[in-house]
Amino acid sequence: MAHAAPRPRIMPGQQPDRIRVFSERAHAVAKLAVPIVLGLVYGYWAAANRRYGGPLTGWNILFGFLTALTFAVLCTALLNVASKLRREVHAVLWGAFSCAAVGFLVSQSNMSVLRSTALGVVVAAGVFATLFYRYYTHEDAQGHRTE
Image (tube, rainbow, N blue to C red; front, side, top):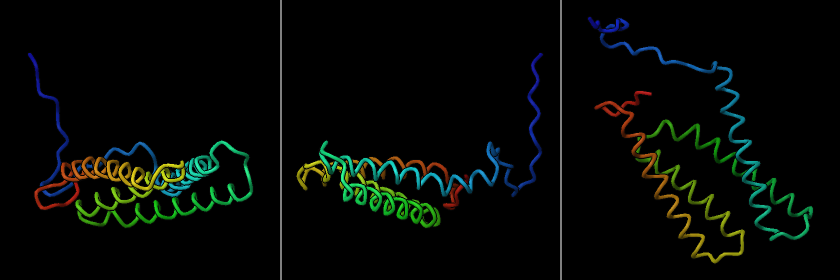
């Protein structure tokens, strides 16, 4: 005969403990390290697009590092600010950031401004739709995040 599995007893109004795979220290390090690593990859990519396969110059390296710094600072600011906003604004900010990032990369590869803008807007629409759905499905009836 089958029996129901025992459930943990949680008092009404209490939140169940979330399972944490990594420690709080690992999350704090990742919150700083991930934007830096993404910024370095983005800066290298933008610099490689800009030189069109030509020789590596000092100005190209400077451009890559400044692009990486700008990307990392904006990504860190967005990670800290956007999570405190409503789901619509949160999704719009990430969509705008992705639009600007993709549009800038495409514009560095000798494409027209219209093409880079169109590709950025298409990516932003996809990011907005995906994130809005995620944020909308992870809230309770009053709009408070469950995760």
